Length: 125
Image (cartoon, rainbow, N blue to C red; front, side, top):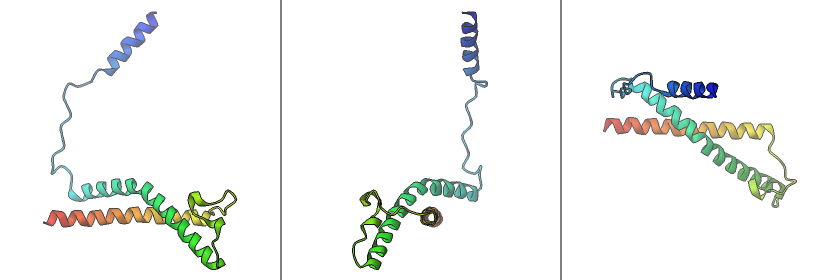
């Protein structure tokens, strides 16, 4: 019982703030503009990666299906995109996965660059 009381007391003491002062908010001129732009770009790039990977995978699968169907002269069901593929369909190989990853990350970086230029244009106005 005594150990439990000491543990509870220790938890209560450790949860108390060490200082009573609230953190001071950032000032607008505290960071240079390039650092703010770099931070915004990294957040936008990392935030866009999941969406661009999904979209690039969908378009890659549709393009692969269309190309293989054109080459065979008929609908190539084994290359059907995503959820339309049969269970014994042709899976993506490592080269395809690498291409999809490169396309998705590049698209996310392009989105961040476009956002940067739009921000520069907005600051000029």
